[in-house]
Length: 225
Image 1 (cartoon, one colour):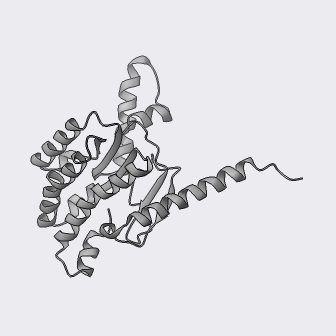
Image 2: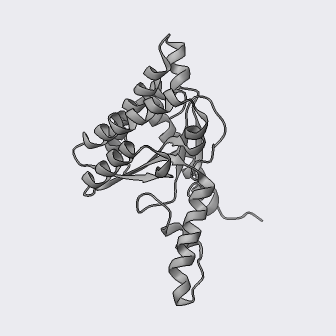
Image 3: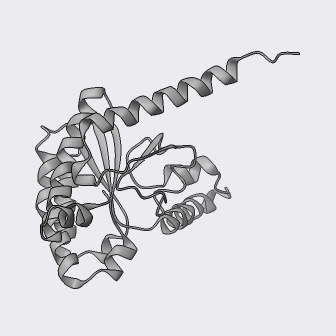
């Protein structure tokens, strides 16, 4: 969800308006995913570094949006989405954690899975999963393998990420789920997050599909000698 503040400045608005527009835009993306049959979505909302480095007033506003707008947008989709939270929620105020916990519980019956990365740190994500795997397997004398670690990562039941869409013209991953996205395709959009449209969303999916088709074609083409 990158480019909220730049979008607001370009429109002559307060940066807080950009954050609100970005939060409200989540519902649009959920609707687009529903229309094309995507039932696993991960949204990078806020990194742990964001929380530590940004000013108190901005963080307070972001927490308010996380307590009100974001859960409401998920709940408004008629119970379709089950919410998961990835990240260090101890960095969040008690009221924000409570609102997210309520939304997680209220959506437990959803058939599709939405993971929100909040207070997220990709390296800590891996460390925590490895630690959990070691603690769980040690009593049986087992050692963690890739599958054991993957199962203990946060989020929905499908961990591997197929496509990463990065908005606002940035070309870095910014620690976005490094374990889960190791095999992902990247789509870099110059559009700021609040202005990211359904047309560009479908363009990203088409680009991904074409790349996947090319890979499958090249892997099945017999060698010439």
